[in-house]
Image (cartoon, rainbow, N blue to C red):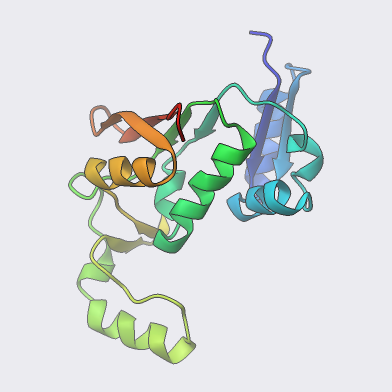
Length: 179
């Protein structure tokens, strides 16, 4: 459709698969990087994404494949603030796992043990409601549409859609004009 697309993925095997899919599209590039690398690129002009995002204007941002559920609570606001700096006029489509519809993780059954293990390892967070673990998914956190709307307001967006319809909950955030 004529868009320049910059995509990134932290898992090398998935990067290679994405590059194969993107190969027919000369204006598309796939970089091996993470959301933390995106913040590093925007805030410090460093890391693997820096040459791909510095000085660029983006028309839209997509955080797909339930990736927002892998952004820990304390990192959600800084990430959304980074996106506002990177693309101040762009809408953000994000995908997440909803608290009511996601698979129940084993964490609910072993919360006390898990909290103890986190304390022993010096991890920065304790297991809280919404934290889950599935063997095929790893650790993740569920969100509700109300939490998404609250995060949007705190970071200069408004959620014009935060729904759980379909197979994957999603939210469409648009920048507040004042924000």
